[in-house]
Length: 229
Image 1: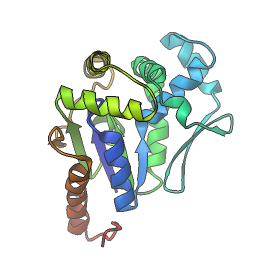
Image 2: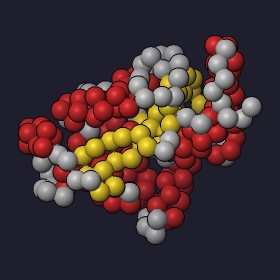
Image 3: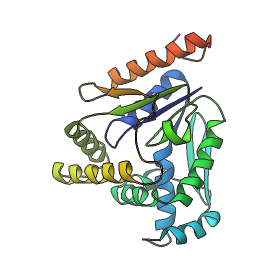
């Protein structure tokens, strides 16, 4: 079973999807981390590469993506990537290179291969429309701008990165603009996706709502996949 969850930056996708996967005993597939890992690998060699230059480097990158112990593990030259890909510079570069068809094709191939390895919760900005259009459950998580700004600021503050509300709002607006207006795989809800506004919901409420949706599908199909009984 595939649960695909899309939505803009700061909507709470990463935290919610990680907890949801744990509750259901599914694999959590963070497609955004895959873009950040690719951005990190490219930046470690040279910044500001054009789409053509990136396309030429992709076959030679020593990146590997695998499912291990119920989660996504990303390695570069055999070394696992963790905190290296979690800063604002990498996030900005990931957004930039995501505009290139060669990048999206490269990662799309990986994402679909990983999706064949078991029950997954996949999150990103085009997982319901492009990566897993066949997903049994598709959800588009959204929230008002103020809520998204505060959530994303808290995420960075937990990493020791202090960002002003104004700066974070600017970054989110720019990311929304880039994601929704790009010619290739723009961010938008799938036609059959459930729209869930999380502005006035805490993490536990969002997770419980998604668990109910998933359990309803599993019960309908006669499966026994959740870990909650």
